[in-house]
Image (cartoon, rainbow, N blue to C red; front, side, top):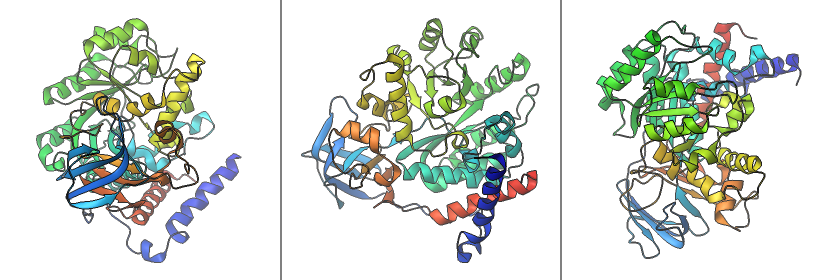
Length: 476
């Protein structure tokens, strides 16, 4: 698409989004991030019966014609002879599995979906920096709510909201409020504001305020808090007097730390080794991307207990290189898969990213059989949960765990015939196939429709927010 055509299309779409595309009744009352009108469904008791259950538990495996019994947010029983109770949900023809666990997502910039263009000045980093600096707390709310709605719609039950545009405590609160209202399980990693000079430490007031009052924000424990840390490198090296106080404060507050490091293969070498030598890794640290790592650095990560999150969709799109998933798995380092940012990747279907992860590994190995479909699905469920330190709660289906699960219906043209369930789920699932989504025992999607989120309101709010940002930045 030519640049003039692209501008015209975006301007026209913005105008439609705020004037003509949606009904006047929807536009009459634009949603506000300050409203708390969303009411989540109650946790009750129900039994899904006669389904093909993929437990993602090695001891249980797959269970055809099985049931899953849920009571007060907890899985009570799983199996062919499982106890039943409460509402009876017919799972005939359905595939039931754990909800997907997403491990690193800049949900705050989802309203810039596919906005990274084809020239350096329109690339991802200048785009999010320019527009991010103009975002109000309500803009953050609208963007994160859009992302959370898309996550639930496509089968994610946990997301890691990597919020590196915390311009004030109110901005952080807006991100958390969007997650809370959606009812999704999540971690909010509180970061720095876009445009902050790398010579200046980030204001610690927002994260300290959140940590001090986290019980008021946690949505009954569904949400946890972490720090999105700049690390030792951004455009160039950051001085210790800038990065060290941020890191030390996270440790003082007892918060998990997450950092982008060694992002670009062959262009960001030695960064993990420097982290290691500076004593800036540990079980509380998650490394994002980690493409430019050596075997020696893998050993350092393994010994430290740190985890890794990789995002094949964005890493390939931006030209960082191929993820090193097989090498990481071989060392038993906890690893999860992420969306990263819709500004680069467009849609946020994690099944598609898992498929891409498998295909990347097979392409690198020049083998059809390097990574199995089931292993790829494990990366999006139990392995992702392990990398986030929540595998004792979610990521697989077994009695005692929290009821985070999804039901997939193959009754659509893109699935239609069920051959091998693991291959079919990985290779064919789209949001339209996700019939039901349950988070902590609450049914947030049923019969293909979101139950706690007004989709039209979410779309209207996101479009209105983007139009305001465009106006403030004078982008036409």
